[in-house]
Image 1 (cartoon, rainbow, N blue to C red):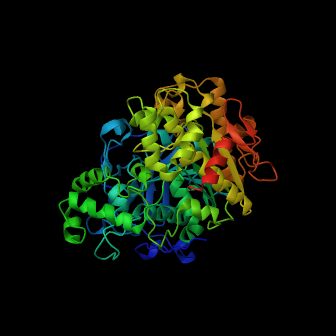
Image 2: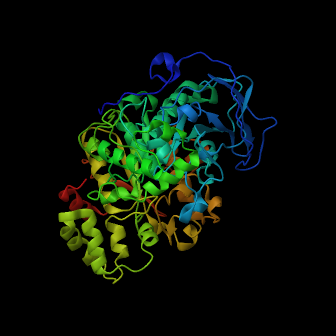
Image 3: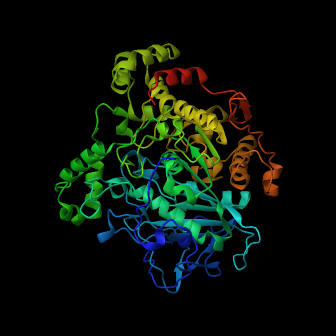
Amino acid sequence: MARGEPVFAGPALRLDRSALESAQNDISKDSGYASRTVLGHGSAQDGPQVQTKYGMLKGLTVDKAHIFYGIPFADPPVGERRWKPPAAVTPWKGVHDCTFPRPACMQACSGPISDECPAKVSEDCLYLNIFVPLDIDLKSPLLKPLPVMVWIHGGDFIAGSASKPLYDGRFISNFTHTVVVSLEYRLGAFGFLVSGKNPKISATGNYGILDQQAALLWVQQNIAVFGGNPNRVTIFGESAGAQSVSLHLTLQSSQLLFQQAVSQSLPFSIPLKTRHEALKLGKHFAKLANCTVKDWACLRALSAQEVLAAQVKAGSKIVNPFRFLEIFETWGPFMDMVLFKEQPIAAFQKGHWQKDKPVLLGTTSEEGVIFVYGVFTKPVSALECSVYTTAIFKHHALHVLHKYIPLYKDTDRRTMLAQVSLAPILLQLTDYVFVCPTRRAARAMASEGGAVWLYVFDHAMADHRVWAGLSFCYGHVCHGAELPLLFSSASVANFSLTPPEQLLANRMLCSWGAFAHSADPSSPAQQTPFCQRQHPLPWPRYSNPAGWLMMNLTLRSHAQPGFRDQLCDFWDKLGLY
């Protein structure tokens, strides 16, 4: 197990049994926001109320679930609390209004991703949302509490929000009979700036991961009053959210906070920064902010917009030219030798993870293509392709080119680059970053006795019509293409599903729900009548004796021996991840 001790501030955020069983309090706190954009129509006047450890909450009831938006799980990380670990939320008097989403964490809303950005952002952003099935009576305790699914959003650790319409948790909650939680965490320089080692006079990074731990601890302390079972918590996330999931699986300090995990499109080959690299980025950030890295007073005096402006400028520079892929995740977790002592892919290969926890993980079939076309707006010649490949793979470049160039006969080499390893500012790509290291990790985990299920979401299931409305897709090739189906939120992308596509969406949703209920995505046990009618997919456990069978999620979903195995064998032999 990789070692990592929590460094939360405040007694209520200590990971011990007494903290999980603390008594209720009712001291005051003001919500302070006026925006009241709600996903769907509901009643706030007669909305449900629950008494948490920290005070009373009032939510609303919509057509599919009871919803509690904007629950504070830590004190606002503003003023003196900027660049500090999350502190226990101050209890409040009266009733906290949970009928509308709070602003997302600070992020830059400009350029090609502007349509995906939240309408409101703030440094005061440590809130979570809870979705409870409509048939649950929150006025009386359940004899058998429900499984809990905690969603960690993606966005390259610089963007995204728990309240994004795409992540509307009421459908998963209602149809799978689970309590769904979505959480915010600090992003970019606010969440990951490193300016030194002394936490009293410098930023020491990894605050975004500590925020996630604080939210998970809040779930342990309070989810029972929402009908949830704190002993049956599944964390799940996509892209940077999947990377977060993988990190919690290697953290001893996260061990008590969840029981199983789902990792969707994990960019395994994007390395965590070393302390030296993180500090180098911090120095560049400070210079752009007209401070020095040692001038703590100057850094603390920066406005939120000044921090954000310096973050954006600093993020355009490659910190380590020998790690070209870092440009695709400039801000994010780093190896501080306290929480993280090794790269995630190495941790899984060496068995340094929580082996008692079932894990479901997978990728989409062509998620790199759109990003290369987004970055390289003009055709890429064979010579240019060779230059970019050499920048990434150095002395292995000839082997990579020899393997991939024969596969793509077009004079335009952008498709080949997408299959190899380029990625955009926000998300990443296919074989080297996603598919093959995921297979490598899954095999290592299964060989250690872990309960592992592997999937690929196959782009061939969708036609151009289905995905044209999503900005992260090119034609029907998408990173995160499974999300509208999984969350049953197709309406936010302005398209409707055909009956076969809807069946696939239902089966995926129910597979995730089955995993939450019974740690097996194919189990019909304890499923809702809705899910029982979908005929659960016969999803085999990923293991060598079973022939390394994985699930291909497509219009005709089926188990298969592998996906791109020949290419993944090639990458495994190169030993680059």
